[in-house]
Length: 279
Ligand code: PMM
Image 1: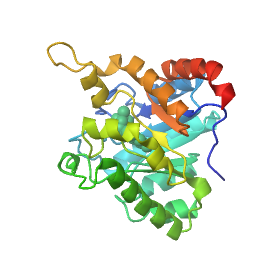
Image 2 (image 1 turned 90 degrees about the vertical axis):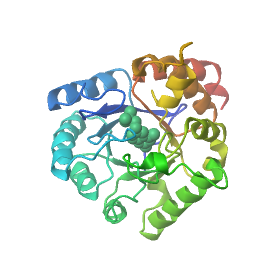
Image 3 (image 1 turned 45 degrees about the vertical axis):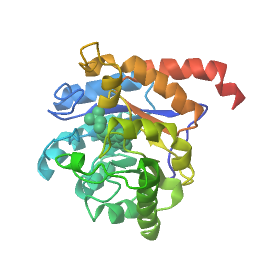
Image 4 (image 1 turned 180 degrees about the horizontal axis):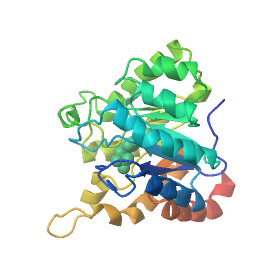
Protein backbone atom coordinates (compact mmCIF):
# COMPACT_ATOMS: atom_id res chain seq x y z
CA UNK A 1 0.00 0.00 0.00
CA UNK A 2 1.41 3.41 -0.95
CA UNK A 3 1.32 6.41 1.34
CA UNK A 4 -1.82 8.58 1.34
CA UNK A 5 -1.50 11.48 -1.10
CA UNK A 6 -2.59 15.05 -0.44
CA UNK A 7 -5.15 16.66 -2.74
CA UNK A 8 -4.79 20.41 -3.11
CA UNK A 9 -3.44 21.06 0.39
CA UNK A 10 -1.16 19.31 2.89
CA UNK A 11 -2.64 16.39 4.77
CA UNK A 12 -3.53 17.30 8.34
CA UNK A 13 -2.35 14.78 10.91
CA UNK A 14 -4.15 15.31 14.22
CA UNK A 15 -2.22 14.42 17.38
CA UNK A 16 -3.61 12.07 20.01
CA UNK A 17 -1.05 11.72 22.79
CA UNK A 18 -2.11 8.90 25.10
CA UNK A 19 0.48 9.99 27.64
CA UNK A 20 0.51 11.44 31.13
CA UNK A 21 3.42 13.78 30.32
CA UNK A 22 3.50 15.27 26.79
CA UNK A 23 4.57 18.90 26.78
CA UNK A 24 1.44 20.41 25.34
CA UNK A 25 -1.43 18.14 26.29
CA UNK A 26 0.04 15.63 28.74
CA UNK A 27 -2.61 13.78 30.69
CA UNK A 28 -5.60 15.20 28.86
CA UNK A 29 -6.25 12.08 26.78
CA UNK A 30 -4.35 9.57 28.93
CA UNK A 31 -7.17 7.07 29.35
CA UNK A 32 -8.54 4.97 26.54
CA UNK A 33 -12.01 6.46 26.32
CA UNK A 34 -10.91 10.08 26.32
CA UNK A 35 -8.19 9.32 23.74
CA UNK A 36 -10.72 7.64 21.41
CA UNK A 37 -13.21 10.48 21.93
CA UNK A 38 -10.50 13.03 21.17
CA UNK A 39 -9.49 11.17 18.01
CA UNK A 40 -13.11 11.07 16.82
CA UNK A 41 -13.43 14.78 17.54
CA UNK A 42 -10.32 15.52 15.44
CA UNK A 43 -11.77 13.46 12.57
CA UNK A 44 -15.02 15.43 12.89
CA UNK A 45 -12.93 18.60 12.60
CA UNK A 46 -11.47 17.27 9.36
CA UNK A 47 -8.21 15.55 10.30
CA UNK A 48 -6.98 13.34 7.45
CA UNK A 49 -4.79 11.18 9.70
CA UNK A 50 -4.71 10.52 13.45
CA UNK A 51 -1.27 10.10 15.02
CA UNK A 52 -1.52 8.02 18.20
CA UNK A 53 1.44 8.11 20.56
CA UNK A 54 2.13 6.53 23.94
CA UNK A 55 5.57 7.95 24.69
CA UNK A 56 6.26 11.58 25.45
CA UNK A 57 9.28 12.92 23.58
CA UNK A 58 9.43 16.31 25.27
CA UNK A 59 12.97 17.32 26.27
CA UNK A 60 14.02 15.47 29.42
CA UNK A 61 11.18 12.90 29.36
CA UNK A 62 11.92 9.36 30.55
CA UNK A 63 10.68 6.35 28.58
CA UNK A 64 7.65 4.17 29.44
CA UNK A 65 8.03 0.38 29.56
CA UNK A 66 7.17 -1.42 26.31
CA UNK A 67 4.18 -3.07 27.98
CA UNK A 68 2.93 0.31 29.15
CA UNK A 69 3.29 1.81 25.69
CA UNK A 70 1.49 -1.14 24.07
CA UNK A 71 -1.29 -0.90 26.62
CA UNK A 72 -1.72 2.81 25.99
CA UNK A 73 -1.84 2.82 22.20
CA UNK A 74 -3.03 -0.51 20.80
CA UNK A 75 -6.66 -0.43 22.04
CA UNK A 76 -7.02 3.21 20.98
CA UNK A 77 -5.62 2.44 17.52
CA UNK A 78 -7.89 -0.58 17.14
CA UNK A 79 -10.97 1.44 17.99
CA UNK A 80 -10.12 4.46 15.84
CA UNK A 81 -9.06 2.33 12.85
CA UNK A 82 -12.30 0.33 13.17
CA UNK A 83 -14.22 3.63 12.99
CA UNK A 84 -12.67 4.21 9.56
CA UNK A 85 -9.96 6.70 10.52
CA UNK A 86 -6.56 6.59 8.82
CA UNK A 87 -4.31 5.89 11.79
CA UNK A 88 -0.61 6.48 12.36
CA UNK A 89 1.32 5.20 15.35
CA UNK A 90 3.94 7.48 16.88
CA UNK A 91 6.52 5.04 18.25
CA UNK A 92 10.22 4.27 18.25
CA UNK A 93 9.68 0.60 19.11
CA UNK A 94 9.40 -2.18 16.53
CA UNK A 95 7.20 -4.24 18.82
CA UNK A 96 4.73 -1.39 19.21
CA UNK A 97 4.80 -0.63 15.48
CA UNK A 98 4.05 -4.27 14.67
CA UNK A 99 1.16 -4.46 17.14
CA UNK A 100 -0.18 -1.12 15.92
CA UNK A 101 -0.15 -2.23 12.28
CA UNK A 102 -1.90 -5.47 13.28
CA UNK A 103 -4.51 -3.31 15.04
CA UNK A 104 -5.11 -1.25 11.89
CA UNK A 105 -2.48 1.51 11.77
CA UNK A 106 -1.32 2.29 8.24
CA UNK A 107 1.49 4.70 9.06
CA UNK A 108 4.45 4.19 11.40
CA UNK A 109 5.72 7.57 12.57
CA UNK A 110 9.12 6.93 14.16
CA UNK A 111 10.69 10.09 15.57
CA UNK A 112 14.03 8.27 15.53
CA UNK A 113 13.79 7.34 11.84
CA UNK A 114 14.56 3.74 12.73
CA UNK A 115 17.64 4.54 14.83
CA UNK A 116 16.27 3.82 18.30
CA UNK A 117 15.32 0.20 17.64
CA UNK A 118 17.34 -1.89 15.18
CA UNK A 119 14.29 -4.07 14.47
CA UNK A 120 12.13 -1.16 13.37
CA UNK A 121 13.20 -0.98 9.72
CA UNK A 122 12.90 -4.77 9.12
CA UNK A 123 9.43 -4.73 10.71
CA UNK A 124 8.34 -1.84 8.49
CA UNK A 125 9.86 -3.51 5.43
CA UNK A 126 7.79 -6.62 6.17
CA UNK A 127 4.58 -4.62 6.49
CA UNK A 128 2.84 -2.44 3.93
CA UNK A 129 2.81 0.59 6.22
CA UNK A 130 4.05 4.04 5.28
CA UNK A 131 7.07 5.08 7.34
CA UNK A 132 7.73 8.60 8.60
CA UNK A 133 11.48 8.96 9.09
CA UNK A 134 12.09 11.93 11.36
CA UNK A 135 15.51 13.47 11.95
CA UNK A 136 16.68 12.46 15.42
CA UNK A 137 19.93 12.05 17.31
CA UNK A 138 19.20 10.91 20.86
CA UNK A 139 16.43 10.11 23.30
CA UNK A 140 14.61 13.02 24.92
CA UNK A 141 16.56 12.64 28.16
CA UNK A 142 19.80 13.55 26.38
CA UNK A 143 18.87 15.29 23.14
CA UNK A 144 19.74 18.78 24.31
CA UNK A 145 23.41 17.68 24.37
CA UNK A 146 23.34 16.85 20.64
CA UNK A 147 22.69 20.23 19.06
CA UNK A 148 26.03 20.72 17.31
CA UNK A 149 25.92 20.89 13.51
CA UNK A 150 29.43 21.72 12.20
CA UNK A 151 28.24 22.27 8.60
CA UNK A 152 25.07 24.04 9.63
CA UNK A 153 21.80 22.51 10.72
CA UNK A 154 20.27 22.25 7.25
CA UNK A 155 23.20 20.36 5.74
CA UNK A 156 23.47 18.17 8.86
CA UNK A 157 19.80 17.24 8.94
CA UNK A 158 19.76 16.61 5.20
CA UNK A 159 22.79 14.32 5.38
CA UNK A 160 21.49 12.36 8.38
CA UNK A 161 18.05 11.97 6.78
CA UNK A 162 19.75 10.73 3.60
CA UNK A 163 21.46 8.06 5.73
CA UNK A 164 18.07 6.95 7.08
CA UNK A 165 16.73 6.79 3.54
CA UNK A 166 19.66 4.65 2.47
CA UNK A 167 18.97 2.25 5.35
CA UNK A 168 15.26 2.07 4.47
CA UNK A 169 15.95 1.47 0.79
CA UNK A 170 18.57 -1.16 1.59
CA UNK A 171 15.98 -3.00 3.68
CA UNK A 172 13.57 -2.94 0.74
CA UNK A 173 11.17 -0.19 1.80
CA UNK A 174 10.07 1.50 -1.44
CA UNK A 175 10.12 5.30 -1.74
CA UNK A 176 6.32 5.23 -2.21
CA UNK A 177 6.06 4.27 1.47
CA UNK A 178 8.47 6.86 2.90
CA UNK A 179 7.95 10.39 4.24
CA UNK A 180 10.71 12.48 5.85
CA UNK A 181 10.48 15.02 8.66
CA UNK A 182 13.05 17.61 9.85
CA UNK A 183 12.25 16.86 13.51
CA UNK A 184 11.74 20.38 14.81
CA UNK A 185 12.86 20.65 18.44
CA UNK A 186 14.63 17.29 18.49
CA UNK A 187 18.32 17.98 19.21
CA UNK A 188 17.70 21.46 17.80
CA UNK A 189 17.65 24.95 19.21
CA UNK A 190 14.89 27.43 18.38
CA UNK A 191 17.26 29.05 15.88
CA UNK A 192 17.86 25.68 14.22
CA UNK A 193 14.10 25.18 13.85
CA UNK A 194 13.72 28.54 12.11
CA UNK A 195 16.66 27.80 9.82
CA UNK A 196 15.13 24.46 8.85
CA UNK A 197 11.72 26.00 8.20
CA UNK A 198 13.37 28.58 5.96
CA UNK A 199 15.19 25.91 3.94
CA UNK A 200 12.61 23.17 3.49
CA UNK A 201 13.36 23.11 -0.24
CA UNK A 202 16.80 21.70 0.58
CA UNK A 203 15.18 18.84 2.47
CA UNK A 204 12.58 18.40 -0.28
CA UNK A 205 15.50 17.88 -2.67
CA UNK A 206 15.90 14.44 -1.07
CA UNK A 207 13.01 13.64 -3.42
CA UNK A 208 10.52 12.52 -0.78
CA UNK A 209 7.44 14.14 0.73
CA UNK A 210 7.88 16.18 3.91
CA UNK A 211 5.93 16.06 7.15
CA UNK A 212 6.42 19.03 9.47
CA UNK A 213 5.61 19.05 13.19
CA UNK A 214 5.77 22.58 14.55
CA UNK A 215 2.52 22.57 16.48
CA UNK A 216 2.68 24.33 19.87
CA UNK A 217 6.43 23.79 20.13
CA UNK A 218 8.67 25.82 22.41
CA UNK A 219 10.25 27.89 19.65
CA UNK A 220 6.81 29.34 18.86
CA UNK A 221 6.20 30.00 22.55
CA UNK A 222 9.52 31.84 22.79
CA UNK A 223 8.85 33.88 19.67
CA UNK A 224 5.56 35.01 21.21
CA UNK A 225 6.99 35.62 24.70
CA UNK A 226 5.54 38.48 26.72
CA UNK A 227 7.42 41.64 27.72
CA UNK A 228 9.01 39.79 30.66
CA UNK A 229 10.26 37.02 28.40
CA UNK A 230 7.69 34.47 29.61
CA UNK A 231 6.88 32.13 26.72
CA UNK A 232 3.32 32.08 25.39
CA UNK A 233 1.46 29.15 27.07
CA UNK A 234 1.25 25.99 24.94
CA UNK A 235 -2.49 26.22 24.40
CA UNK A 236 -2.24 29.78 23.01
CA UNK A 237 0.06 29.16 20.08
CA UNK A 238 -2.50 28.05 17.49
CA UNK A 239 -2.50 31.30 15.47
CA UNK A 240 1.25 31.03 15.01
CA UNK A 241 0.68 27.43 13.95
CA UNK A 242 -1.90 28.52 11.39
CA UNK A 243 0.50 31.08 9.90
CA UNK A 244 3.11 28.35 9.58
CA UNK A 245 0.56 26.00 8.02
CA UNK A 246 -0.01 28.46 5.18
CA UNK A 247 3.71 28.95 4.63
CA UNK A 248 4.25 25.19 4.62
CA UNK A 249 1.37 24.71 2.16
CA UNK A 250 3.00 27.23 -0.16
CA UNK A 251 6.12 25.10 -0.12
CA UNK A 252 4.21 21.97 -1.02
CA UNK A 253 4.73 19.93 2.14
CA UNK A 254 3.00 16.55 2.28
CA UNK A 255 1.61 16.85 5.78
CA UNK A 256 1.35 18.88 8.96
CA UNK A 257 1.33 17.20 12.36
CA UNK A 258 -0.86 19.41 14.56
CA UNK A 259 -2.84 19.60 17.77
CA UNK A 260 -5.17 22.33 16.50
CA UNK A 261 -6.88 20.63 13.57
CA UNK A 262 -9.70 23.12 13.11
CA UNK A 263 -7.45 26.20 13.19
CA UNK A 264 -5.01 24.55 10.78
CA UNK A 265 -7.75 23.57 8.33
CA UNK A 266 -9.31 27.05 8.49
CA UNK A 267 -5.97 28.54 7.48
CA UNK A 268 -5.45 25.97 4.73
CA UNK A 269 -8.97 26.53 3.40
CA UNK A 270 -8.30 30.25 3.05
CA UNK A 271 -4.98 29.52 1.36
CA UNK A 272 -6.59 27.03 -1.01
CA UNK A 273 -9.34 29.47 -1.95
CA UNK A 274 -6.81 32.10 -2.94
CA UNK A 275 -3.78 30.15 -4.03
CA UNK A 276 -4.51 26.47 -4.20
CA UNK A 277 -6.25 26.59 -7.56
CA UNK A 278 -3.15 28.08 -9.12
CA UNK A 279 -0.90 25.21 -8.10
N1 PMM B 1 6.99 15.89 17.39
C1 PMM B 1 6.59 15.29 18.53
C2 PMM B 1 6.19 13.94 18.52
N2 PMM B 1 6.16 13.23 17.38
N3 PMM B 1 6.50 13.10 15.06
C3 PMM B 1 6.89 13.67 13.92
N4 PMM B 1 6.88 12.97 12.76
N5 PMM B 1 7.32 14.97 13.85
C4 PMM B 1 7.37 15.76 14.98
O1 PMM B 1 7.79 16.93 14.88
C5 PMM B 1 6.97 15.18 16.22
C6 PMM B 1 6.53 13.82 16.22
C7 PMM B 1 6.58 16.06 19.82
O2 PMM B 1 5.42 16.80 19.95
P1 PMM B 1 4.15 16.35 20.86
O3 PMM B 1 4.67 16.07 22.24
O4 PMM B 1 3.22 17.50 20.82
O5 PMM B 1 3.51 15.13 20.27
